[in-house]
Length: 247
Image: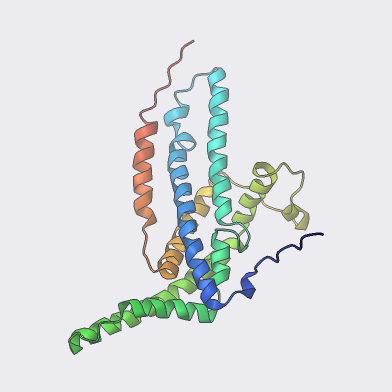
C-alpha cells in the first residue's frame, strides 16, 4: 500500500502566534548564516579584492592554482549570500521567509506590543519615574513598529532589484547548477553581474538583518562590531602569509 505524502505546512496555514514563533527561530539562524558571510567577505577583502597575496604569486604553475583558490573563495561568498536571499519557503532560513512570516499588520502590532511591554515599568515605582519609563516604553513600541515596516520595505526593494536578479542568476546558472539558460533568462533579459555587486548586496543586507533581529527577537546586535573583529582576524592571517618561489 502506497504511503500518503504528508502535506507540507504553508505559512498561510499558520496562526499569527505560530508565525511569530517561527520568525524568531528562523531569525536566529539567519543571523548565524549572515555572520558567516561577513567572515567570508573579510577574508575575500584580502584574497580577492587586494594585491596582498596576488602580488606575491610569480608567473608559474602556482598562479593557476591561486586563480582557482581566488575564484572558489569568491564563489562561496556569492552562494552563501544568495542563500540568505533565496525564495520563500517554510523550511528555509532566510530573509524573504522571515519577512513573509511577519508581513501582516496584526503581527507587526503584536511584535510592537511585545517590545513595549518589555519596557513597561514596575507598578511599585514612584509615579514620576514610572511616567518617564512608560513614555519610553511607548516610544520603543512605536520604534519597533516603524523599523519593522522599514525592514520589510527595504527587503522588498532588494528582492525586486536588478542587482539581486543578476547575482541570483549567476548562482543558479554557473554555481549551483550548470545551465544553458535559467528560468529568469527565459522570462526576459537579465543584466550581467558586475564585479563587486555582491559587496553592494551585502551592505544593503546589514540594516535589514539588524532591524529584523532586533524587533522580531527583542535583542539588538551590531554587525559592524563583527565586521571589525573579522577584518582584524583576516588581516592577521593573510598579511602574515608569505609565498616563496621555490623554482
